[in-house]
Image (tube, rainbow, N blue to C red):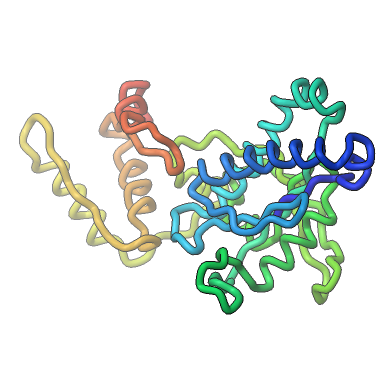
Length: 272
């Protein structure tokens, strides 16, 4: 949820028509940032925008993508500040709140052609977070922070009271994403527990490596999301670090770099 700070004062200062042109330009920038990360812009309310990541279209790393989109939007506004000041006489700032959880997405109303909308407690929480945020600030709920911890730089603001939400919610201020070529790196930063039930698979990978003929050899690891493929490879690389030179290449979610794995591999060894 993104909302322009001091929108009423800005409208009084520059006039309704200029305010409309300004908001049109800013909302277009916000939509571009959202769609670049695979999100969906759902509803507009005067000077605010509600976007969703992971619904109605499921995407990988939805919480991290939402963070990247929010940061990209704020950066885009900062990059256009001189031009906006010259054209409209103001430099607008947005407050952004990001929350996550179970929601309902659908067409609300009797007309089948109505736009998609989203409902649920996370929407209410995101709205309250953006109200709590200072101009130019991005606030995360505890649920979002748990998904992106280790992959973003934040400040823990502690428990906060959010209007209409029972109890006090833990809130974090988002500053930037961290440089993590391996998407598993964030989990490593958060700390790993011992892997259970994958000893046979790890042994099979070792056999494939030790018995392969000279030259190129490929082994396919497949399975549903979250089953532990990245963790298995992490443990394999760690077990080989004293006996093999290991290179790693990986695509980045949300980017258009098909040759990124090759760039990673040729940039240098990851271990050994």
